[in-house]
Length: 205
Image (cartoon, rainbow, N blue to C red; front, side):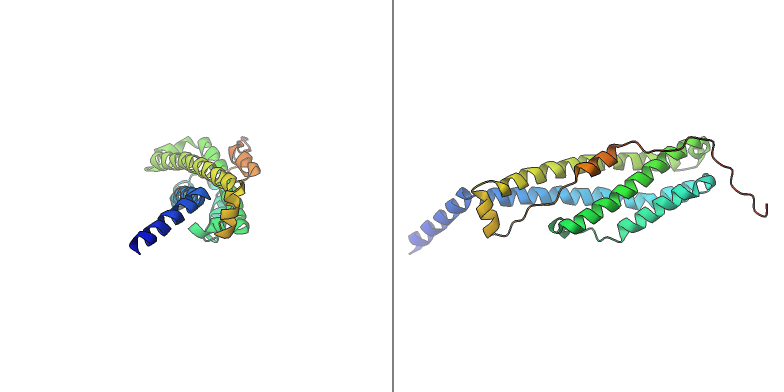
């Protein structure tokens, strides 16, 4: 009896391996791990933004529109619950992606604008904060690329025969990925007006 059970277990394992189940599970775990790192890096950026805005708002009073755009974009990102399950919902993933793209654009414009104000570099903590923001953007790029590659590998397996049959039986769907349009928008340099900043209005003037 014990020999029969052992034989059944071995055969079941062999069948699961042959139909690609183990491969799909391994690749799905890689996708989840890569996605977790994406969320971690985006959250790190979101946590840095309030400090950045508070540090520069006094020195760049003539750029309130850009500061407000950053604050509003961050609030929009925060309104979307970023969870591991987000990659199970393509529509929610697209909304989250769009919100992050808007925040990336607003933050890029702010980081370019602050270069007009050399006095910012004399403010305690600004240079370190700027370096943290730039470092986080680099980490985001790396994390996104790893996620893109993991999803591409997994989705090819889900679409391929005979693993597509296994994926269907076990309810393993395609995973949403970052779109080409979104990647292009992120890599596009921000359009910033380099004209002389307007002076802040004088109270009572």
